Length: 235
Image 1 (cartoon, rainbow, N blue to C red):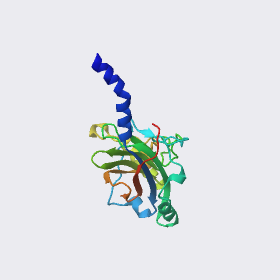
Image 2 (image 1 turned 45 degrees about the vertical axis):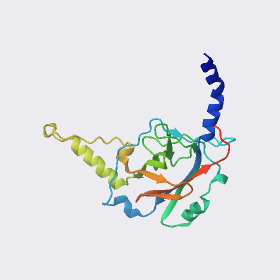
Image 3 (image 1 turned 180 degrees about the vertical axis):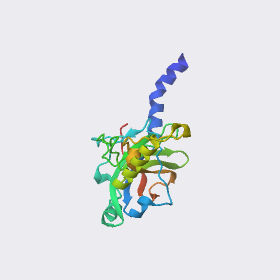
Image 4 (image 1 turned 90 degrees about the vertical axis):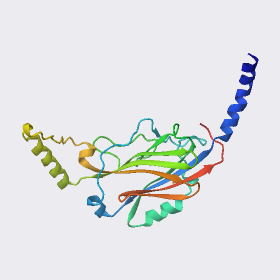
């Protein structure tokens, strides 16, 4: 009993010590699109219609009165304004979003996936079945011996009228095929996967604190910087 009482008395001190050792980071992301139209029909890379795992992912909340985990940072706290301005002036790329957030460094079993879309974080607008966002997916920061950023993102390009007509004709043709030939018909239901090309980017990147990292894809790209945060925070 005496040992139990001592443990209970020491618990607040131990928790405070553990919290003091918790490392926090500022994650800043620039998303840009490649404007080269040749990529739309490139034969060197294919479309991927599988989806990221959104289970347990977290959307960024609106900025609060103080630093809070997974809340959107005010523009004045962002460090990559110069890079975003350069992208705005460039003709071959287009700035999609520039944003950032704070979070604790968490081991892989506890690391949180952040839902990333081209809609404003906190707005709840992540597109609909017939009109998906241009970009949707997750980013996940993991702290082990080193920092790692896992990205699983999909870029949606709408099909033009000619491509949609061809797809609908193919669906109609297959639905009329003889079932004895074991032909599996394609259902044309105007879902995003039937009205858009979907290009997937999956990477796990080791991150060095304070360095700027580029995550490239022929259709879109990200610029990411992770920096240690020393200020006071609220969970």
